[in-house]
Amino acid sequence: MIKTAIKTKAYAANGPSEDLKPFELQRREPGPTDVLIDIKFCGICHSDLHMVHGDWGVTTYPVVPGHEIAGIVASVGENVKRFKAGDRVGVGCMVDSCKECKSCEAGEEQYCENGNVLTYGALERDGVTMTYGGYSERVTVNERFVVRIPDALPLDKAAPLLCAGITTYSPLVHWKAGPGKSVAVVGIGGLGHMAVKIAAKMGAEVTTISRSANKKADAKAMGAKDHIATSDSAACEKAQESFDLIINTVSSAADMNLYLGMLKRDGVMVLVGAPAEALPVQAFSLIPKRRSLAGSTIGGMRETQEMLDFCAEHNIAADIEVITIDKVNEAYERLLKSDVRYRFVIDMDSLKQ
Ligand code: NAP
Ligand code: ZN
Image (cartoon, rainbow, N blue to C red):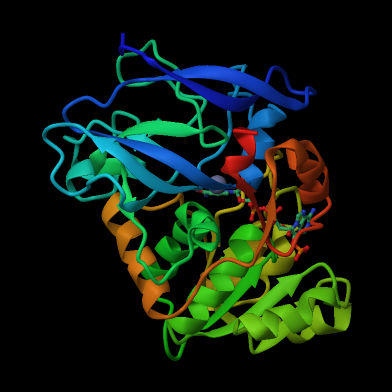
């Protein structure tokens, strides 16, 4: 059992239809390889909603969500070399992994063969201690799972990069988005808007696919060349066989066959969106054009640092609406209606008041 010691204010949900409410938890004193972080900002990912609402059937309550953490190092354990008090740092969706399997050795800790430890709602590797997320004052994390936030990135706009940024950067790199590639992004929310900005700076020709036309101007400002509203059937018809790669960020059940039809021969659609429902796929959406349907989850720690450095170099950050923690339940309701441009970020100082 990990020794717990530091009283920490947080917000938790006690059940699938409960509001988030004030909660107190214990953080461990930093061990030799740990970093203790004062959390300044935490993004609200749609996964937080899925988890709080129990959509995936894996939630243990009380759950303290939050895996888009940006903060300042408060103290470090005696063997920590990479960080010191005062450093600007981030923590994303994982706080541990086995560090020994082939995936961990390859720097792909998110695919740890012995199971990574998610930032909240998971058991630590001791098998008994629950992890609690970033809707809290501070967190203690093994240094391998802490990344440096470059000075060029403000902490509030950088927080969403820790999940939305890396979850889209990783498949864009893996499937080689770049000059000469036509990339479409489906769903212009937290993940989607980061995918657009990152793919455009990688040099790809980017098209946004949204349910309506009203995100068109924003999409162009983010770097998209074209925008398709799926409510416009003529535009969807015209877009058949147009894209090499589609990054699909849709958070609830939608017709995957519509998007698959927009892939060129040998095109790939990558699901990063994680609806609870099964998604029916027609065999003939794939077969005639040798298309692929793939999935991807977050990214490894080395790649997360690479993504932050890429964003700093190319002046990319999230478009955010900063809220105080007492507005979190309202923010969840608005996020369900896609009523945010494009990420809510909680100012964690509001927890101290
Ligand atoms: P978000 O901000 O709510 O964005 C999701 C977008 O999907 C919406 O803005 C909307 O875009 C579109 N959408 C929602 N319902 C739809 C429907 N029924 N039909 C068509 N489009 C729909 O959510 P997010 O934070 O970006 O997260 C998106 C999904 O990714 C969630 O399921 C989340 O759990 C998952 N996720 C996965 C990973 C991973 O590792 N793979 C990491 C983080 C999040 P328009 O308004 O433009 O249509
Ligand atoms: Zn997330």
